Amino acid sequence: MKSIYKKPISLNGVHTHYCTGCGHGLVHRLIAEVIDELKIRERTIGIAPVGCAVLAYDYWNFDVTEAAHGRPLAVATGIKRVQPDKIVFTYQGDGDLASIGANETIHAANRGENLTVIFINNGVYGMTGGQMAPTTLMGQKTTTTKLGRDHKLHGFPLPLLDMLKVLDGVCYLERRSLFSPAEVIKAKKAISKSFINQIDGLGFSMVEILSPCPTHWKMSSLECLTWIEKEVTKTYPVERVK
Amino acid sequence: MKRRTLISGNEAFAEAAIRAGCGFYAGYPITPQNELIEYMSRRMIAEGKVFVQAESELASINMIFGASLSGVRCMTSSSSPGISLMQEGISYLAGCELPAVIVNVMRGGPGLGNIAPSQADYFQSTRGGGHGDYRTIVLAPSTVAEIVKLTPLAFELADKYRNVVLLLGDGILGQMMEAVDEDLFDIKTKEYPKPWALRGCEGRAPQSIKSLYLAPGALEEVNLRLEAKYNQIREEEVRYQELIDKNTRVVLVAYGTVARLCRGVIRKLRSENINVGLFRPITLWPFPNQRLSEISKTVKKFLVLEMSTGQMIDDVRIVLDRSAEIEFLGRTGGSIFSEDEIIAKIKKMLKIK
Image (cartoon, rainbow over all chains, first blue to last red; front, top):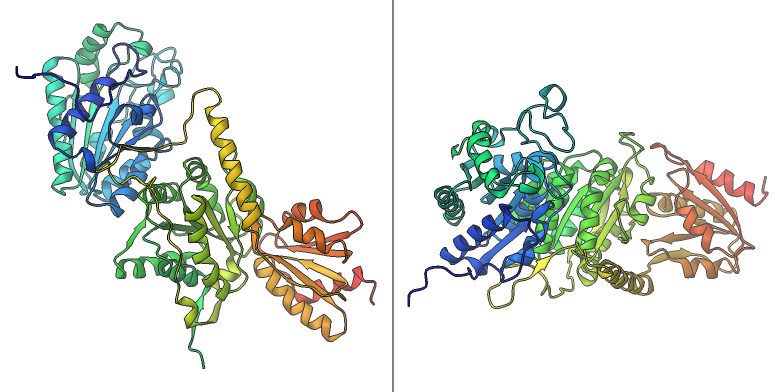
C-alpha cells in the first residue's frame, strides 16, 4: 500500500507545548518535510529563538542550538562562516527578529549571509502573555495596548520585509500565511525555495509566515484564520516581496 | 643572537591568537584596541581563516557563540564599554559551556569615560558582569611578551574547561610596542576533542546546545555541575609571580601594567637598601588566595596598587592574615601612577623620611 502521509524523519515524535490552533507546530512540520525532501537533515543546523518556539530543539530531529533573544542571525553568521558546507537556518518570532534583533537581522541580510530565515509573525509576544509586538496591527488590542495600538503612543506595524527589500545582499523575500490548505501549500513552497537558495549559495532568504495565536488574540482557531485572511493581510499582504 | 620583533600589545594578542589556532574572529572597532581588529582583518583572511567586522559588540559575541558551538577556536576583542555590551553573550556562553577567548583592553569608565588606560573592570571581569551563577577565567599579562605567552594558554584553558577566558589588558599594554623574541611566536597548543559541537547529525544522534532548564531542580543540578568545574579551576589553574625574599618589608600587590611599574619602583628602592617585594596575580580569577595568605604570615605590610579606586583590594583583604597591615594606592579615570608617588607612599608606610 502506498503511504501518502507520515511523520517526517526531521520531526521528533513528541507532544509539543503549543496551544491549540497555534501556527508553530504546523510550520515546524513544514520545515521538517522540506528538510526531508531536500535530504539535508544530516547537515542542517537550526537555531531556535527565545519566545514560544524556544523548545524547538526538542521537536526537530537534527542539530539545533538556542540563541539569546534577538541574536539568532549573529549566531547563524558564526556557524555558517566556519561551516559553509552546512545548511543553517533561524526560526524567529516577530519580537525576536523585528524588535530586539532588528539590527542583527538588517546586518546579516545586508552582508548577504547565505542563510535561511523563517519568520513567524503572529503580531503578539506569546510567551510573555500577549504584549504588543512590532508587527501588532493598528488598533489591535494587546496586554500593553489595552485600548488598541495607537501610532501616537506605539508607532506603526513594522514592514520588515519591505525594509529588507532594498538591500543588495538579500536574495529572496516572501510572505505567506496558514489561513487555508492552499496557503499552507504555498507557505511550504516558499520555505522550500528559501532552503534551495542556500543550497545553491544564492544568499540571504527569508520567509515570513502570518501565523495564528488563538490564546492571545482571544479567538477560536477558526476565527484566527479568518482574521488573518481578512485583516492581517491588509497590512501584510501575502506575496513575493523580492 | 635571537631575532626579535617590535610589536604592539594589541597586535601581539592578534598574532598569538592566530598562531594558537584561532579560526574565527569577530569584532567592532573601539579605542584603544583598534590595532587588534585591523591586524585581524588582514592576517585572518591571509591565513584562510574567518574575520567578520560585526555591526555591534552584541553581534560580535553572538557570532563567537556560533563559531564556538561549531567546534572552532574563536576570539573577539573590545574595550570596556564594548565588553559591557557583551555581558549577555558571555552569560549564554557560560550557560552553554562554550569555549571562547575575549580580550578587554581596558579604558577609563564609568560610562563613555575616556580612552586612557584603566583597571576599573576588575569587578566586571572576576565577578561576572552578566546574569547567573558563572565564572570566567581571567588572565592578566603585564608585558607584550607575556601577551604572547598567555594568549595560547587562554585558548587551551577555554577548550579544556569549555569556559570563557578573558585576557585583561589596558590602554598602555595594548598600545605599547616592545621587542619580543620571535621564537615566542612558535606556538603549539594542546587540542581537545569537541564531541559536543554541532556539525550536523551525520553518523550520530542529533544534539543541541542550550542553557534553558525549566524542570524543577534541573537548573540547580546544572549549576552545581558548573560549580564543580569552577572548583577544579580554582584548584588547578592559579597562576602568579612573586619577587619576595626573607628580608622583604613591604609587598606590593599589583597586576598588569601597574605590576610593571612596580618593578621599576622595586629596583630603585633596593638600590637604597629598602627591600620591597611584588606579588603579581596572573590569574585574577581564580585569585591566588592561598599563596597570598601564606606570605602574610611572614611579611606584615602590603600595598595594593590599582588603576581604579580599589577593586582587587577586596580579594587581597579577605585572604591576608589578620595581623597584616594593608594600604591602597589608586589612580583612576585613565590617570596613571608616577614611580615617585609610589615610592613616597612606601616610605610613608615604612616611616622613612
